[in-house]
Length: 366
Ligand SMILES: Nc1ncnc2c1ncn2[C@@H]1O[C@H](COP(=O)(O)OP(=O)(O)O)[C@@H](O)[C@H]1O
Ligand SMILES: [Mg+2]
Image (cartoon, rainbow, N blue to C red):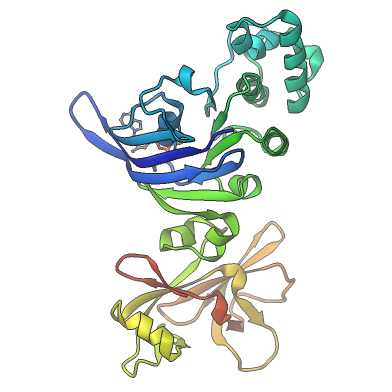
């Protein structure tokens, strides 16, 4: 078990023509020992670059990498005892058994021990023992990915790096492998970093996640905190399905409420005191699943006209127009009898409302 620390890591790629891409910018992050941590972010935000720097496949332009308190920045991948599974793993032209045993055969380990280890790993991953003599070339993507994970695990590495291992798999195989990975990381207690652009994966696998955008770590926290308390608008809309609703709003002249062009949010003195430090222009954020639809005939809440009803699995997504400028999406699992054109009352619980700075996107309240 090893704790991984990245200190002021910047990475710049320079192409042959001299074009520069800043893939990582001043990243500081510590991955706890023996746990699984998720890294989530859109394509191109620097996830693979970060993993390669941890694995030693890439030397960072700037900054240091520590395993526990050992500076490993200048060590080769072999010296770091790291196993990495790529998005498109290779299966060597040999039997499935030999593919999995490969890392051990490079060491001086007895045939019996190797056999025992292969059988253990094969069982953990649910690879059928009867197919081990088949050639691994041309196996289906799900099995190829399992072989790659098995080959990574058999080395008993200190660190396991998984780069979008499920992205190219069929839904059923994906669920199976996801379940196995969860069991494996729990029982082996190996420091694992799981990279994906798919939030559903990372939310089930990891307790802590780092959300990245454009080469930076925007938020690094427990999964529930990232969901409930996004520190930046980017996290609010990237996490969640669909992401947060955002409404532009301004502090009113009397400094008592936020004018949201269709509804008002009243503020207490402390809130106003905090907000005025940032000016008058803000953005209100609320998650679609946190808005309630009041079915009664009461006049509580905000009036909206249903413009579209979508069904997503067992949930309903109700799009409601509040005013010309403002629309909100509500996600509910209730079986509401609504039609497009219906007028509804929307309740926005104040404790679920987040206020962001419109200039920077950073969260201000609460
Ligand atoms: N070998 C490379 N040469 C030049 N630019 C690269 C190279 N690899 C990645 N990049 C660029 O660096 C950025 C981060 O890439 P990457 O780490 O692969 O992101 P992710 O894994 O999050 O999709 C992207 O803009 C990508 O185009
Ligand atoms: Mg990648």
